[in-house]
Image (cartoon, rainbow, N blue to C red; front, top):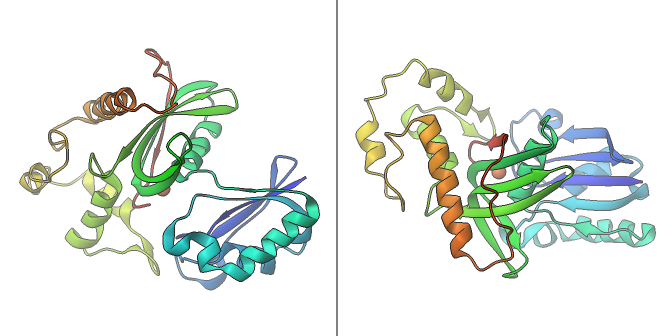
Length: 258
Ligand SMILES: [Fe+2]
């Protein structure tokens, strides 16, 4: 059975799984020589994967930008629906952070772990509330081949990814994405040699719903995120499962920007 995984945001790409094993993976940037392009991943798949008519299931992360992929690319979306109908398959939309969490947990060596994903914002569907929210930090419990959401934090609480992007582009004048690529890694490398006092007052003045993270250690920051996630979880009357008090392992998915 063939399953296609798709992404039409920055880093337009797709992959094909055959009976659960990745057999084909393509990123548009390797074809057009521009880094991190937006694009129609279905069109890309139809052009580059000759056996596309055999694909049974298609999956694309939750997408609400300009009407989602159905709104932005109606022709290729209809073409996909035709393939699905012929093969009696389905179209799935895993949440943005659900995909990040699955990626970081299933590529770890852990059978049981707390999972934290941090980025600049991505849409996740909350079934109980029947709505899509844009979250910047999420917390999950991974067990075996399952992941369970514990909390979704939104950007008014904290947005580390966009702050990282702003430092990369506004302070250092480096590239933050298309078409030359992301130099966030350069900022991370320079950070190890930089003067921590130079911009500390700026970061202390940032207005989020929490005490400044500027003075926290790495460990204290993650402890803060876990405590904040617990508060969000406890104040939320959704069907999210409770936190376990003790988990041995932690998987962290840290992504600059989106
Ligand atoms: Fe993301």
